[in-house]
Length: 72
Image (cartoon, rainbow, N blue to C red; front, top):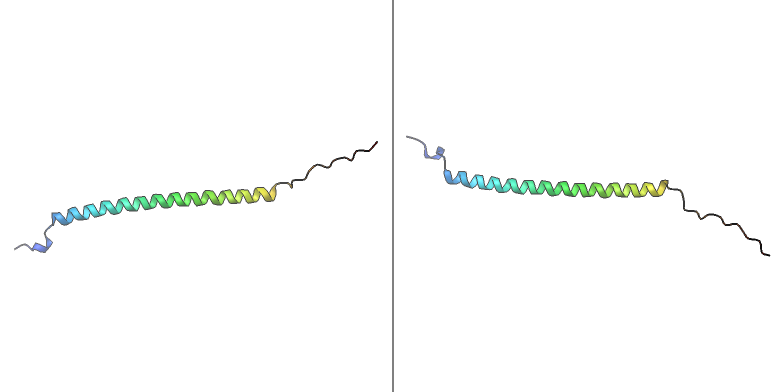
């Protein structure tokens, strides 16, 4: 006599397939969002670093000296 507990259940198989599809979709959406977030953070960090070093290394803004005019 065959054991009924080892027999395949088509309803369980369909349910697990659907659950796996939903989990895969959620996993891919989460991964894409985390990649977008990481890219945005990196872009902002690089912009801040460039802004900082551009200000530090740029020559100071000094107005040119004006020559005094002689009064007549």
